[in-house]
Length: 335
Image (tube, rainbow, N blue to C red):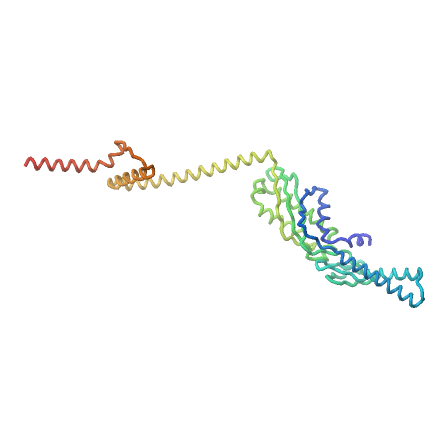
């Protein structure tokens, strides 16, 4: 009964805080993790006020009956009125829209009630826990966790979860919010230990999915489902960051040289094919030479000075034609 009374004031709104408190024994939650949005959080003030009003009304009715029947109010009347008010307040409860109340009868599970007004039999029935079925968040992380290549890294993450079975969350596990935090941390350490530091840094999405599946597999029998797991930060030791940066630069240079080599290979093959085409056609080769000279003049906008060896491509054909004309002229003059 003492534990039941202690748990009676717990809600899943305070589950996140309980999880953070329990998890803080292994890891201190950094400041600013729980970001404030400026919006007011839902409270149970209305339900508390309702219970007080029920107590006052029952207390007043009993006193009025004693006044009408005996013509006065004594200590007995006050005691009876107080007991009646307590019984009335413990019989009528208000369960909020996002809550479920687990009702026990003589210590044995009876039903899950709510939301709305819930009636219980005084003394023989009570509810031990109000389960908040809204989405809850739990911060967790792993400090100085060794990867498969023996590199210690720090990883922080946020878990989004909710309770889908109020009965299982109450009767199957003592403190489900703390269990969520510890299981999440253990699953993260195992996942990091199976991967290298490069895989952890570059495969966040795969790590998120792996963590989600591992955590949900253990929490599902307790009536808890995992909505999402988000990796917040991955911190690599500073002395290793420079080495990883140098490795990344070397990898980029290697890729660039491979691309350049492949391009030169393709160009050489194209030039080889072109040489085979120009080898049997001298006129095509001269036209290509003239085209290259035109492009160079067009781009530079200046004067092109052609070396004698290069100019043979332009004048070779003209020289042959001039020689033929001279031969024909000399032959005609001799006749």
